[in-house]
Length: 262
Image (tube, rainbow, N blue to C red; front, top):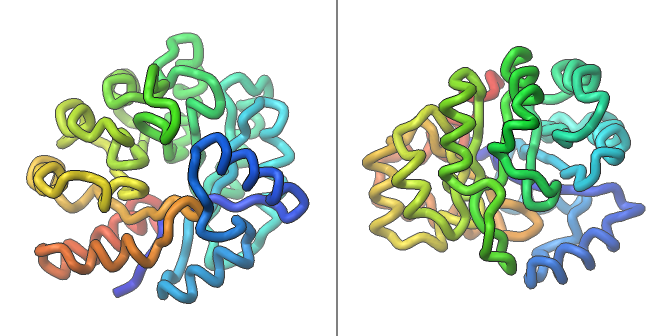
């Protein structure tokens, strides 16, 4: 089966050690690898992954241009670029046009970027993203160490889905990390894709079965969250599921290809 990893992070080598130290201390985890482009390619080869979505989040508005300049310079045919954007970046209209020409989608991480996903004051940004038909991957749910006041809870995601029905959204972590019951209640069956990162092996099996029955198999996509998770373990888990091969193939590659038209 073809495999595409829909959720990976890498950083330039000049800052990667600093990023690793910061994230490991913030999240209370150990990375499976130093998150460089070369190391991701090695993991992809080991797991027989043909392509990976790569992103690097701008925690501050003034980082948007430099991060995107680096992402756009990668020129690696096995990487699918998800650009950075910050909702308070003043030049967002011009940068969104550049993103449209150089990337497949945008990554938002509201907790790192310190904004609420359903904040009415940034609706004009969503309006522009929707107008340009740029897909959006958003972290959903809790953080590993911070389990209060999630800035992109399933209920907040639903508010944006209802307000912007043409916005193409991937809800990371099955729509709500550590909030899977809420995701099932508010988002299952809606016009949203879920990625499996950090979730598919953590969830209770009955919850996963309920996602399959209520959301179907056409809008669930495999993502590992490299370098926080080992992609091989998630792939093995998906292949072990008692579902038909056609649905495994949808999750592992077909759905993301359809979503991004690749």
